[in-house]
Image 1 (spheres, one colour):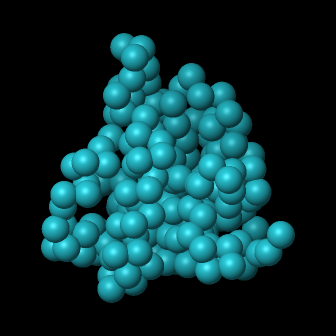
Image 2 (cartoon, helix red, strand yellow):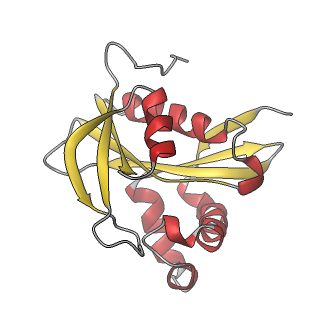
Length: 175
């Protein structure tokens, strides 16, 4: 199997991001707040603005897009932190290291931006996702919020997990 490469997308690559994002929304609608129909109808200006708000990471294998993730601000109250969000991997590439490569790249992007923490929101009932994040050194915080995606189970929550980006990298190797 060939190597996985992860790279940040340039604003001019908005169409590439749009195509992969729409594929993700169609394949895993339960994983996202937005819907495929909503985002498919958005004009070029929407996509260009989205590209400028956060760093969009594209994972590729042999030139084919196999996953995406984004790194953006947590909020004005946490200028030292970034958050990883919108992580998605094509079903046929799951379990092959794509998600891990995206998390590592996201941590490096955040560190290069001078951030000292990386947040990642995970469903409290999603043991697999919690274990995955923990394997990189992410640790749960006291911050919780209602699940942002539509769910059949009322009351589901997400927990913010955080990874220190300074000092001990919690399993994130340096480049």
